[in-house]
Image (cartoon, rainbow, N blue to C red):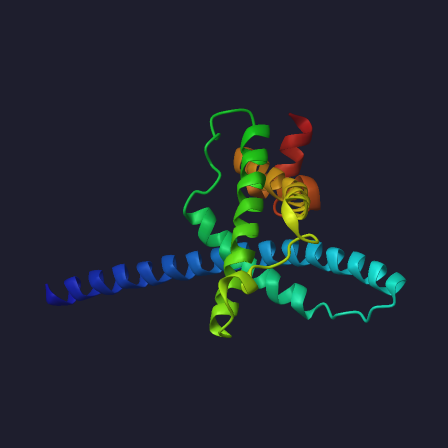
Length: 191
């Protein structure tokens, strides 16, 4: 009887470990997809700055900063998603959650950027006013401009995410990328 109880406990423990492992792998995949997406648009923003800087004769800064910020913001995005930021319109047509999540995360990114600079400034011993970052050239117009860029850049990401949630991620991946289930693609083409 004790052996059977021990076997049951071992089986439960093994099942829990497998579930934790599967969850960790899924979270890692989500993290890397988000990080790559954010890095791509930060890299494009930096490339744009490089073009402008070269015209002005300024020296170019490396893409390492874009990668680091992408990794940090990907983690911020995962935490914010787990807190259900921007999911107020789930029962409405897809355009509503796509746009509200894009807007909410654009705001989250701007706020995080400000808090990040304030924290670094305080660690360096700077006054709060000196630590506030200049966003988009400064002023409210600069902040709104950067927020709009983030908002528009996030729309395709959340469109893909929300459509995948509705029709199934495997089916969407098969339709868009041609992998993740050929049977899913055939079903969608015949239906």
